[in-house]
Every structure is written in C-alpha cells, then in structure tokens.
Length: 359
Image 1 (spheres, one colour):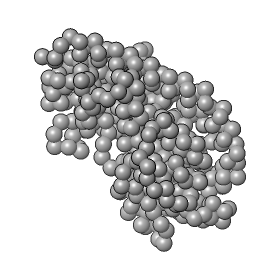
Image 2 (image 1 turned 135 degrees about the vertical axis):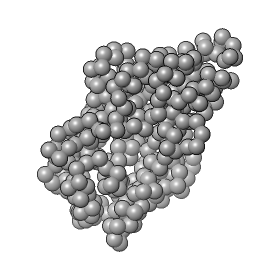
Image 3 (image 1 turned 90 degrees about the vertical axis):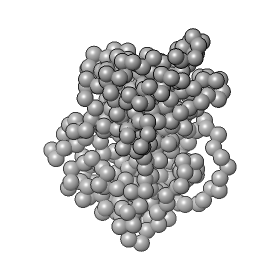
Image 4 (image 1 turned 120 degrees about the vertical axis):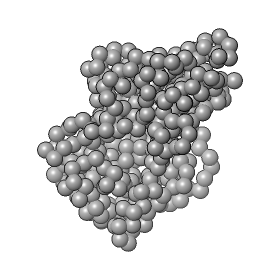
C-alpha cells in the first residue's frame, strides 16, 4: 500500500478543504484507487506536532513515506509553509509541488507590490530545485518562477476546478437563495481605506441584488472569523457550513453566488452555478485570468462602483454561460496538465516503493 504525505494549508478556511478534495481525486485517479494520505499542516502555527518541511516531519517522511506532495494553496505567498532548506536536502522520497501560488497585494497607490510575509525567493528556488514535479496555480505565479530561472515548472490551475467530478454525499439541499460569500475585512490584505469600504459594499450589494429580483440574499462564511463580520452587518442571515461537503452542496444548489472568495467562485464555475467574482489581490486576479474569465472578474480595489459592476454582471448572466462554454478548452488543458503531472508523480512513487521499504 502506497503511503503519501500531503503537506497543505489547514486552519479556518474551508476553501483549503475544497482544494484538498481535488488533490485526493487526482491521487486516486493516478494511483488507480485508494492510497494512504497522511495530512500534515503546512505550518506549525496550526499544530503541536509535525508541520511543513521541517526536520521532524522530514524524518518521518523518510522513515515510511513513498512520496510527498506540497499543496495546493497560497504557500509561496503568505508565509504559510515552514521549510528548513538544509533538512530538505535529506528528503529521499519523490517530492511534488502541486498548484502553489505567489501573488502580490495592492498598496495605497493601487499598485501591486510583494507581501511582507511572502516566501523568500531563495526558499522557493530550493523547493523547486528538490522537487521532481512542480505546477504553478496561475499565470502570475508561473511568471514569478520563470523569473527566478526555474524552467521545469508547469502551469496547471487549481484542483478545486475538479469538484464537479466528485461524488458528494447525499445531503439536504436547502433553498438558501442568493449567496454573498464574504471575507472579514481585517483578513483582506488591502489598504485600510478599502477595508473600511467592505462593510457598506456588502450591504449595498445585498440591497441591489434584492431590488433586482435576486433575493433573498444570505451571507456565506468560509471561516469562523467571518462570523463576526457577518454579525456586524445587522439584521441579515448568514450561513457557516460545518463541513466541506455541506459547503459545496450550498454552492452547487444556489441560484446565484456573488463572491469575495476565490474558492466559492471556482467551485461554482465548475458546477455551472451562476457566479460573480470580486477580486482584491493578484492571487485572485491571476487565477481568474488563467481560467479564461478575466472579463467577468471585478477588481474591488480599482473599481469605481462595485455595486454597479455586480448589477451589470447580474443583468448579463447569459453571457457567463457563453463565456464558460468558450473557456472549456482552457479548463481541459489545465486539468490535463494536473493529471499528467500527477501520473508522472505516481510513476516516480511506484518506482521508489519498488526499491523496498524506506530505510
């Protein structure tokens, strides 16, 4: 039986679980069935035990793993992967970097600038230098890796694009109405005066949706920390799914989703649920562009009137269906890269496993 370590973001955000379901789907396809997956938090902030690519976890990987996957997620971007570059040199099983992203944020001049907590380029280079396979999630990340001289990485999209292929548990399908997927403004890496805009923007979007016949509107929280923000909006209903399957079921059955959360928008596009994305950093802008839906995206920071842009998209939902159909070749290409990369990884893992139990 193959045993793999998957080092991935954990914590509060349910979007990370949507990504992991896609990763597991790819693994089971590539290995032809069940494999052991040992999930390890990418950073010690979320555990008292093993974490990231640190000496303790790398020691355990060398003892009994046949391969290790890092990702998917924003792990280049926000300091959420602990790496000991020296210990990494001792890693023996094949390493795959899957769907990692690196994005910039807006400064007060509305220019995209590096985050202060992004992974150092030297660590990114060391990771890719040791990896047998590396896929970037979006075109901005791909360009950054190419700029570092890393020529072996591939542009592969996000595993959450595959959620339509998952067999989801049979769950009640609540008639929630339109969902407005939010993030607590204090968790948004945007200038403070734009953080202050979020409260009124969310309320005005809700009012405009209901006035245009898209009500009732409920807030969708991805993170327990979003509940405080939802509660601050006054007399509005909010929903916090208690597991990833319920979360995906909500997105699949909603008549419309307007989202500040990339991992509400991507599953919706995968399912065919009408959806409108509101980006506020390069991480989101780049991935929406990579999947071919740039013209449908709304840039919260640079938009002169977010509410008007949401109303415009709502009036043109038929255009989204046409856009989604037009982007299918692009989606198939990205999904093909992920599948081919995973198949190559499976071959390396099986060859390593055939050498005998790890010493």
